Image (cartoon, rainbow, N blue to C red; front, side, top):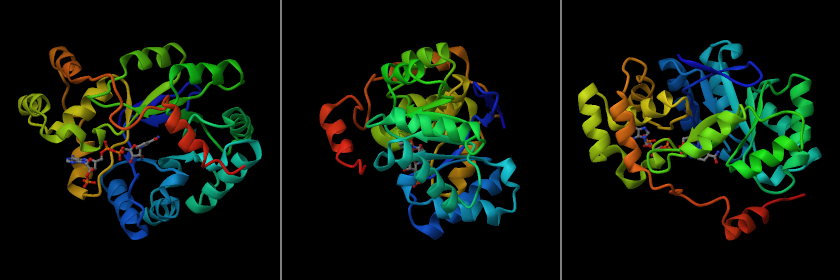
Length: 282
Ligand code: NAP
């Protein structure tokens, strides 16, 4: 497995397994066991996914040493702020049955994220969180966090796929030594990702599926990917992307699919910010 080295020297697999929208306990546990079985060593969960117990149980049942697994979880908006964040990390650790996280992210860029960040810095310094980062932060919010705090985020996990390619965000993140991580590499199948004519035709040249072309394209850009699927054959398909290389021409032609717009919602939309903020408890 190819790895990326984060700004604090922590090593992270460039491909992991995402468990969003796999809330049922036994289903999620089975999926994570399947992923570990076929060779994934990075799992991306979040308090908001309500499946941390299943993820933790699967890691233990797999028999793979905890140190071999790169485990990410995220702070939900209901727990922003210094004290609430410390409590939220403790809850995640309990549910995941572990005493540390490889990466912990602020899930949404709203509310008292500076208070959260300072709590995360403390937990980072005491070794509970091996790396800390953010998610869904546009460059302005990343810069605000960088200039007003001590630890530079190791990762920014943002919507990135062929229809929202985010080359400019990537340039900004690279300039500031923040690793770009993609969520929804397939745009959750929107725009018929898996039967897209261009992606399928590129795939035919390499004997690969459209899904594999998308993941390879992101990996060749140096972007971390965490595809989700509940099907074991697809879990396997999605990791089989290290035995071929896309040509420069194919990499470039995928740029024609960019719409430069989110396929979900904008984190800069005032109505969205209001909706999220109504969920802050403290
Ligand atoms: P995604 O990975 O882009 O797409 C998942 C969808 O693609 C599912 O419907 C899955 O169907 C299908 N699929 C996966 N592999 C396939 C293949 N090889 N062939 C055909 N269909 C395939 O979407 P996502 O789950 O939203 O994003 C990935 C991960 O990113 C999440 O699980 C989560 O960890 C993270 N995420 C983070 C945020 C955030 O705000 N930070 C937001 C969203 C997601 P089946 O399951 O039926 O196979």
